[in-house]
Length: 187
Image (tube, rainbow, N blue to C red):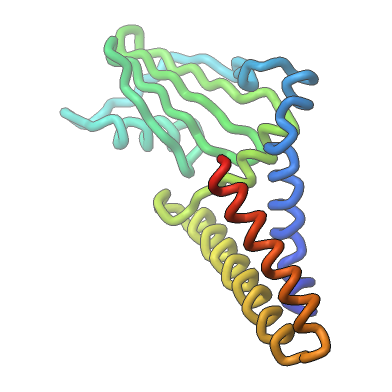
């Protein structure tokens, strides 16, 4: 019971975010089929100096630090040399675009959308980013997974120990396994 109370926020988040992903058509009707647009937050000439032969990752970290936006991110370098950094923020993702030709840095923030927020929440990753809070999030998700496995295994054990429930329990177990296999084969 206490474990369930402790894990309530994570279970609620996964339930609601999965619901949003499962009923994506409702959000397409509401927002349209395109991803959430970015809005200009600021534009400036970037006067920082990058180390010679700096790779895109180092440039991205320097740009994020100068903008006060350190954290989990992805980076790409376009063929024209432009660096695009996508800052993975749960509440307000941002895109930084640095053009070395004119040394401009554009910072844009993603427009808020409920379904996009829920999907970011559901798909949040942590161990690979190297940032402490992301790692703590990943550890908490691993604890939720361990608790779910515990609930499944303890439920099986309790079912087996209570002889009066074996027939109904076996029926529920076989129905669940059968549907799972059916869906797995059909999809």
